[in-house]
Image (cartoon, rainbow, N blue to C red):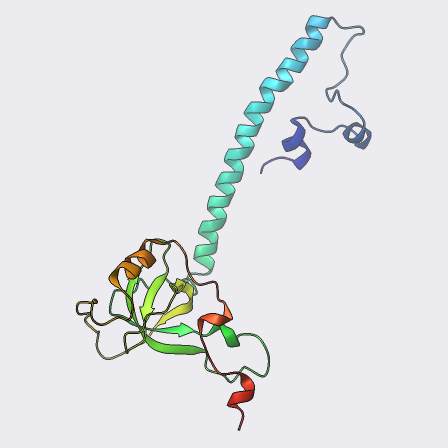
Length: 197
């Protein structure tokens, strides 16, 4: 930010802690007493003029710091930031977020799939379907998908007869900005009690 938070808020530097809490006239005391009304108005108008310049400078410093922090984050985490940019027909695995928490569930399947990418919506989420053509009812967030390394790429034929949803519903999903919210109900799996033998 380049300045103290108090200066960013008030436009003046505090002189003493008492001034911060009590004083409203936060300039150095005048050289002589009394000062004229014109001089007092001039001092206050200079404070107001200077405040806009200071706010612009603070804003530019904060903006530069944000850009630099984003660049630094990308450099430090470039091994973990992936934009796979799956094409239609790509085979992917979907992370099963239902079992991420809890010690009992650590041996459950972490990924579901393979799934076939149909398209991507405006928000960046992927519309995927099972291998039998049943489309997930919501687009899947990009961070939940990883590539399935298959030996071949699936070419998507005309989707009208293959998918279990209409083309109009597919276009509606593509035009949305929404993605799944990692909710448990997006994947219908049997309860833990049903799995135990």
